[in-house]
Length: 226
Image (cartoon, rainbow, N blue to C red):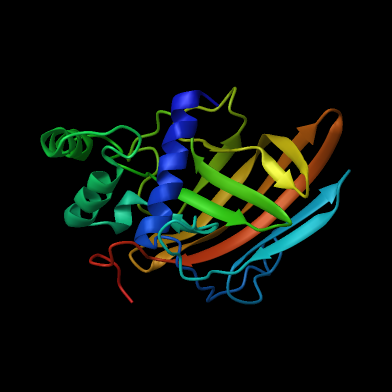
């Protein structure tokens, strides 16, 4: 994955923590999917192959300075006011800027596509971590605000419309994703839910990974429907 994209993801994670985008509640079962069945609040991942593992991510209210490891964030859940607030918080985060320079950066950001965070899905615990995101260069038209299935691709072959992952962490080991599918079953102003299935490798070792998630619409709160 190219460095600019990594920096963008790190900034997105900072935003998730500061705005509380990672609020999570599970309200349905995925027993019919190849992914593990959801049995309570949180996300769930199962790993098999050369390494066997499983973990559940349970949401806790995020706080400023504490990264939200379990949750989802997207521009679609944020109003213009929410986005301006987030962009203002990020302006000058890594470099000192005047108020005028920050304001200019915010206005520039409001004209971008995506403005801030197209979609980020996290399920990270001490046992393992998954970070799903659209491939670099993706626009709103590539990831519309509606249920849809996507190809998961390696960072080398991914194109706009695909999803990619940072290396999957299983215990102390890291595996690079080779391919798979992401099935988003619900994506609206009440939340996002779905499952994924993929393959990953590390120096000749191969694993199969399945997971499920169910997150409420969170963020600034002005657009979300309860």
